[in-house]
Image (cartoon, rainbow, N blue to C red; front, side, top):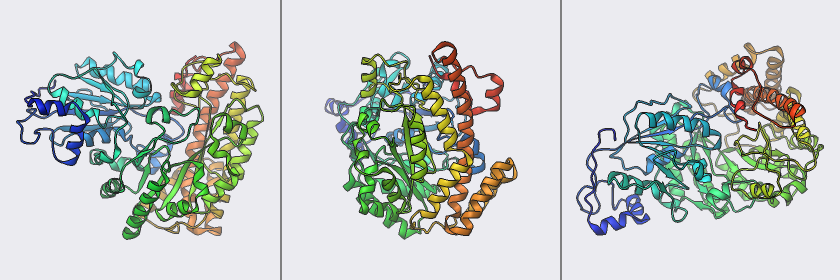
Length: 579
């Protein structure tokens, strides 16, 4: 076990307490700690060495791999799982975080415990990492979203498996490990109380290598969207931290030099009252410090119906919200139980949010049962009319354990397991169109969405119509001029003539018509480069998939050649699409 010696010497009453979540509460309240419990003898001797590893992200819509050098960063934002675990670990133990997105994994590091986390898209790399550490005799524990959603796929692959949230089970495991009495699987009896959560160990991250930091306010969502795995993992009852906890996390991110914070809640307004309380506190904090950080998060579209909420988002300097709009077609929304999106005009709702100075980034889906071959033009028309610069548009995919997965399985329309990447593959047989029509229509849609003219039109319309921001959009921060130079090099000086003209036209029009939005225009110029190039690579993959459908009626592994993949790193992930 890496040379550390452990032994347990707790008295019987203390031993019983340690087996329950009560000890975790005592830990967080400062009434107990790892080495001693209310005056008893030490439970362990020596220091545990814990190495917590996050696998690299495969290229995708949100990774922005091609533009990270221009931003002077190595990753957009960190996975929050490992800093959270580190925060739950008593300080006398040595914890090292490794995010493979910003540094190489040290497989030879001496460690008593190696932890690995990840989503479905990380599964191949997770298995490689686990195998490397096991080959070196390390004790490997696995947890996170994929392990929680599909624990049956991980049993027997690691020494200990964590299913569901680990706030209660991680401290219990550490005690069991010290006593040599660990179990092969840990699962909490109930969802943890987030009001007891400590501040994650952001200080163990290489903060300067990320574009933004991540924090979490709440888990769970009250809605019942058929395709969503969030309510499967976290439940439908929103559970939140207290305002002072979140403010402590924001203050720590600020202390470490972060300029942007992404609140990763799947629905920040699951509990509107608590969300408003937090927004008031963030607004107060920002005013007192001159708004040193921007914020963004994910919300449901019903935010547009609450003017007080929108004003609070603006006052707290939230510049962007991601909203799962999914479809402009009412029948598709009703089919997937996304009824909260049917209570008002979609375009009007998006524009109302924009009027408070907040950009809407949309999640859109094609391939619902109510979708026919006309849905692609309908989607493009909606996104253009709503002035949504960035739309994450993918194909419907049935995730494990979701109601959608159960339904299409019972109907005999599930074609394959989910690969976690809705951009490259749909595992559902469509109802009102053929698979070829789905892939061909989707390929055409993503190309049109990020075509220069379409992107320029809706982005300029957004910038010119957006409401005022609390910072008036013109706040210059340290490093902004250096960043501007890097972006201009990538989008003008080293770009082809079409991109250079697109960038100069966008920036010039913004300077002439709304100079306060110039920084945003610069951001959109570099974001378009990332997304359009990703879509070009994705389009080639979809063309190959269509050719396979024409030849054999099924989609096997991508036939893209090694030379094309070498020229296009974004395609490396696409070969993992299974039959």
